[in-house]
Image (tube, helix red, strand yellow):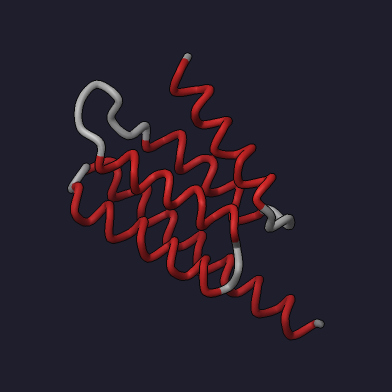
Amino acid sequence: MRAEHDATMLVRAELCERLESLQRLSRRRPKHNLLESIQSIRRLAAAYGLIPVVHLAEAMERAATEEGPRRCATALYLDRLHDAIGCERNDDAVSQAMIASVSVRLGA
């Protein structure tokens, strides 16, 4: 059990580093690099069963590829990704709640 906890902590630390990199990229807005960074976060989270991170990254990918007036609100997703990385629960209910919080803010 201890080894599993340690591995999860290492993965969460790596995800935090990737998220920081993504935050820097989002300020410059190179769409291609932004998508690659989101995908790398999603893949790592999926490999370790961090479901809320996976679902938020998928939602952010979809939003980042949208064109028009509802462009991706990157900061909202980045904040929720940070929360998801630190979240101990890894179920769909948490994922849906975090995605809903982004949707509510986008609609405001």
